[in-house]
Length: 150
Image 1 (cartoon, rainbow, N blue to C red):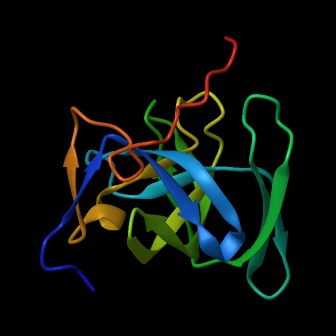
Image 2 (image 1 turned 90 degrees about the vertical axis):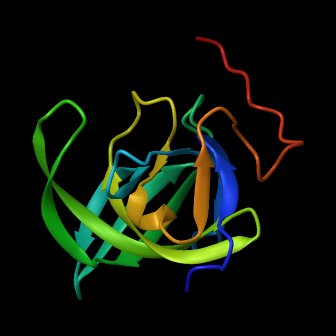
């Protein structure tokens, strides 16, 4: 249910996926994207309309992978930012951004070449959030960005 006053967030935020026991993922808030996506590896379709996949908790080293099993909401063709069409699984989970927790649908995709491991699209943002593209980490102002070697 949307809040009466949207919460201000930046173009990049540190979010949590509490159902999966995952915290502090950097997500890009993208009002140009309709759907949300998360960077995963080792996708395996299981029986009973479920899927298993790995989310890397530490992207720089590829260590600390979290294996998740989730119900498949649906599969569909998605056009990526480079214009190619891909078949993707979609799953639902709760996301926490600041003080707000809401259920969203996520596309399971390979985002390893993207700056942010997760993308929050319009469907996840609508009704609850107002994005200030000049700011980042508004909901966690004391967060120190991770610095990695390039």
